[in-house]
Structure formats: C-alpha cells, structure tokens
Length: 253
Image (cartoon, rainbow, N blue to C red; front, side, top):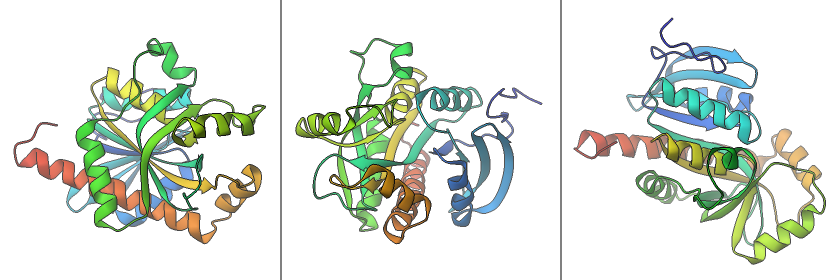
C-alpha cells in the first residue's frame, strides 16, 4: 500500500484534505452519523479512522487517544499522507465561572504545560491555531447559535496530579478558561508541519464541579455534555466546509 503509516494505518489513498480529531475512538463512531458514504479505514491501538462526506466534501475522522504523545503521532502521520487541516474535538474542564456543561470552548492559544510539545521546540514557541481556521470555527458556532467561549486553554499531562485544584485556580486567575491534554501538541506539531489546526472543546466539568463525578456523567452520556459533543462535531464540520468554500473561491489552503 502507498505510504502506509505505522500507527494510524492509513495511506495516501485513504487521505482527505481535512480531518476531525477526537480523542476517544468511540467518538469516531458518533461522527459517522453526520457523514455519508462512510468507510471504515483502520483501528490500531488508540487510532480509529474513517472517511466520509459532509456536504460533498471528503473528511476523515481519526482518534488521537489521550495526551500529547499519541496526538503528535496522529498529526505527524496524517500530515505525511496529505491532510492539510485538522480540528480537534475533545473535552475540557472549565477554569472560570459561567462556562456550563456542554458549552464549547474554542481555543485561541494554549499554555504548553505538557511534555510532547516541548520535545519538538522550546517552550517560548507559541501554541496557537491557524487564524483562518479559527475564524471559520468561531463563525460556525455563531451561525448555529451554540453557546461558546473563545480563549486560552492549558494543556497538561497529568489528570490526577496534586495539587490539581490549586493549579486550576492559579491558571484560571491568569485568564485561562479551560484545560485539556492535547491542544498544545496539536497546535505546535501542526504549526511546525504546515498544517492548519483548530481546537473545539466540550466542557464536561464546571469550575466548581467534582472531576471524577463529572467525567463519569460524561461517559454515561448525560444530556448536556452529549449535546456539547454534537455541537462540537457540527461546528467542526461546518468550519471545514467554509474553509473548503474559501479554497474553491481562490483562497489558499
């Protein structure tokens, strides 16, 4: 097979110009509901992949697994087979009041409190999304009237590290609005490889919520966070359609 990638097990024949990157492989199954002509590609380790069409545009969905290292692998290998734009759809915990369960956090920059991104380049290198794609994500959420918040996220490696509560309070006071484990790596590796990136996070833990309790609600499919997942999928798909329309009309990709 042409250019078979060792971890995601995809080739150039499988590639689409655009990819949606959930962390959870099960979320790939839920993305199927929004696509036509869906094709299962591979499922190796944490990387489950499909392709399909949304409003006539071919799109891949590939799970990254949890954390920066596996995210970096997915981004690297997708870039090698020709994917040009990638949007993460994941979950986060809110670091400020007013962000409800199921609200979208659209990340305009990430604190690089992870190890994977620092393995690529010094910490002074910024973790930021592609401006063009960020604009389309923001506009898509607005067009759908989805509750959303634009701001900085903190990406870290240790979900249960002590003293987590103190860290959340510290970063929240500095204007950071959410925390996850993958966005910084996506932005840095994508930026270094010439890939357009964006990150949409579904809030699953309110600022005063209990981490384990709220995560369990998320896994069980509580209505608010389930709706947030639907919102982030639709927002990502609509943003990629807008990006492709801009490309067709003469804008660079």
